[in-house]
Length: 231
Ligand code: APR
Image (cartoon, rainbow, N blue to C red; front, side, top):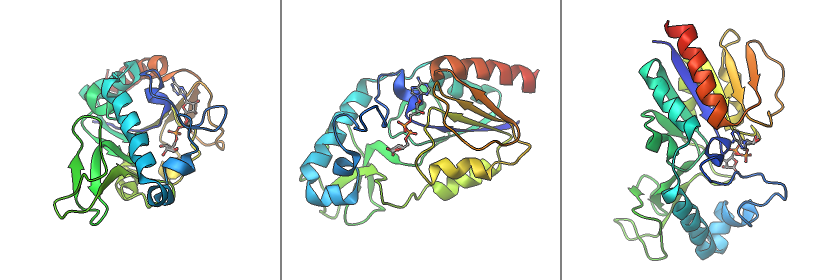
């Protein structure tokens, strides 16, 4: 079975009603990212950070996967598929994808501020001051904030190196190390970028640009790949 590796970003969840990060005025849901998504923000104002992620969790609880998520999940019937996502929502899993690497953490998990190996599921939408790990220290959102290491990057690179087909869907490719994954993909490997506003990246071999929304572009590409590689 051929292996598809898909790097996804906020754009794939946009049609499910989840806001992307880099809107016109540079704010994320009314906040400067540095006020809500950094270790310094957590030190300075944990209430604001908890509340910010509680609101994101609330929105994600009600969100449903769209045709883009579903098409990626359905590709598992024909290919070995690994989804490497920068998104912290769980829409890929809700759509049925079984091999998802969350580079930037997961909204529906929390972890101990005392011992980062203690990770828990968050039931519902709320994580509060006073919610503690089994050793009694405060829980924080299980999110990779700006300035923090990206522990899942090695696993993502390992998957990328094994790709027969590489997809990039709905990401501005502005945030590293995630944006650098494409540099691990072999020259001969077909690379498809799906985004209505295609990110500017250097020319490379076997690069196909599809200026469409994920909900339209991913199902169309999936159909083409199935025809091309499995019939
Ligand atoms: N379908 C596909 N792509 C879309 C759609 C859509 N319906 N709507 C918007 N897009 C594209 C935009 O054109 C843009 O290129 O999605 C991309 C979203 O870019 P960003 O908002 O920068 O999101 P992302 O690339 O995922 O951000 C990376 O930055 O803030 C951090 O940690 C956060 O994971 C996030 C990382």
